[in-house]
Amino acid sequence: MDQNQSVKNRKAMTPYKQTIARYIRSAMMLKGLKYNDLADKLAEYGLVMTPENLRSKVSKGMFSADLFVAIIEVLNVEQDALVDIIKLLKEE
Image (tube, rainbow, N blue to C red; front, side):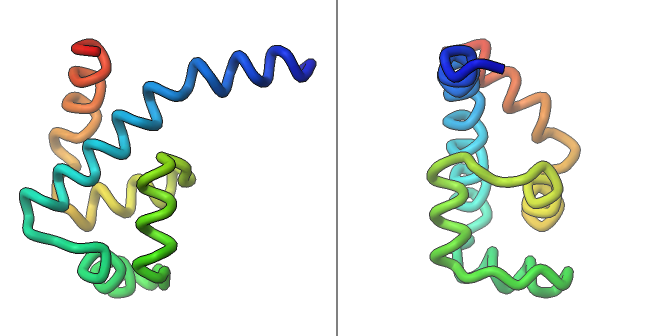
């Protein structure tokens, strides 16, 4: 893939990253969780991450699919997450 196409792909993915980041922050807020709490809950699953690292990943919307699924599970929103995220994307 040429560099120009790579830039276009990154630009096309931006709305997805932003929406996922907003969704995770909203879910945390609704559950009264801070990044320290999220880090603690992930640690219960054997995923050790600092609150700062999580904050950075969420704010950029840059994390692996497996971490995304773990966060969704920890937040206990797995039933609605994907549907809600796609709905938010369509509203933009």
